Length: 294
Image 1 (tube, rainbow, N blue to C red):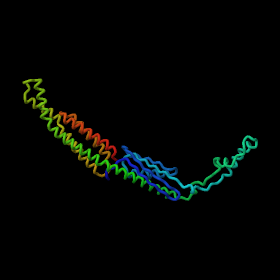
Image 2: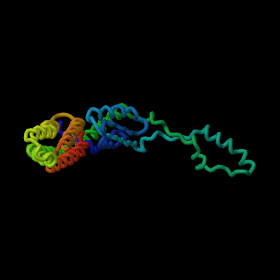
Image 3: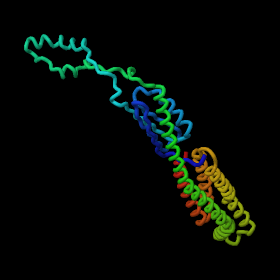
Image 4: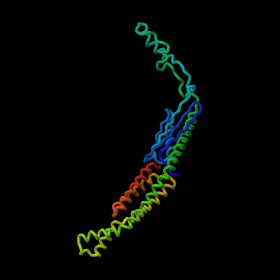
């Protein structure tokens, strides 16, 4: 699977018999996969299938699914008057009308009272609920497919950005290697000058070499540079490999920063320190972009 982002939008519409509906699927960044479904009343069975369909397509991100459905008015069941309920209302108001405390109720007023007008229940409308839910589920799948396409498009846009940052990290690592090779003689000269200032002629060449060698060992960054090179190779494999790479890239970014911090702490020259700081800034840019990767 190509590199995928975590933001996108998908939509699908459908209709069957008297019903019509629209499904919208949206997603934003998230450390884990979270799927939220909102559907019409009476179609709760669709939620489980929608969640399973989302889990089959995505590994990370907050996914919101909304299904809006409506039925044509012409399919509403026959309207009838509940005579018994109407007579109960009339009986209740009759004493007040007879005593002049209230006027006789109007027809439209009576018909607006609860329970007087009845509509045939939805079960009386001929419809295949199982087939209807299956058709709606198919639209949910189409909307999720559209969302997946949008996320892949985001991933395709992220790939050159991330690859460019990895190239920059590699270039800075190479520069740091060249600058680190200049550290031992500079450390020796610096130590010799300082020791001569403190001990004068008593400072022997042998002691200078020993102390300078010990300081050079502490400032040796070859291991850090080697690990940075290995991380560069791993990052490229993840960017072009199969399957979701976001979590592993996020972990790799932490390893990048660990080595860059150690390099800066061991730096003995302004040039290497400057390169290390630029390396850290580039790694931070890489980390920010990785947050968008599934």
